[in-house]
Amino acid sequence: MAMSSDQQRVELLVHLFHGPFKADEGLTDAQLPDTIPSFFMNWLVSHFELLPKEQLAAEAGVSVEAWDWFGMMASGAVPVESLVGVWPAVTTSRRPLPQHVVESAAVVLLVRFTDGRIFPMTTICHRAAMTAGEVPRDCDLAYFLTDRCRDSIDEIRKTSIDQMYERGSEFGDNHNFEQFMGLLLTFINTQVQPQLRPTMLSYVRLFQGIVAPKLSDADRHRIAALKARQAGIVVGGFDLS
Image (cartoon, rainbow, N blue to C red):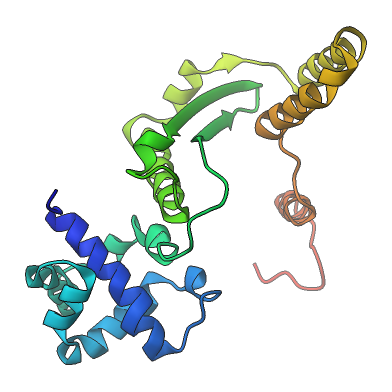
């Protein structure tokens, strides 16, 4: 099946990124995931006229016409933001095939309100929709996550926080959650067969991590500093506000 123009652009982008761009900038495989689109764009602008376009197109398995889009990018007609949606997939596309097979992936968005109401949104992708092959690669998963995170942002853009609130459900405060988890753990420890308890407890930890994830030390310090600042307390030796 012939590739679409968008597919050809991505194939050429991948070839440029992992080929001449990587070589010219002296990047290692470990550095590639941290490379930002604007760094690549600057390289493309400065090297565009010198690149052997027919040769690189043939190596990437695309038509020479795929270069038209890169020419517009180099001239500034196409903004660097156009790369953001595919960039995680581009930077991971040359990794070896994973040894472990991803069956599905899901992105869960929980918007928790101060009164205990929660709006959930979940999107899931099966491996058959993630890749044409048997084993989803790193770039397949990266593209799915990028795409679904964009969907979450679109949910806010198309609706509003107040509409999310109306579509949410009441869950109460953390005390209700703690009571529920206590009852669940009591049931597992007293009613479930011992050989099944480790699996059941794994599900409990997974559920807790989704519904009530623990804050990192850095997040806790950041929140404490923010609350102190809002209360008018100077944090540290200087207050530049």
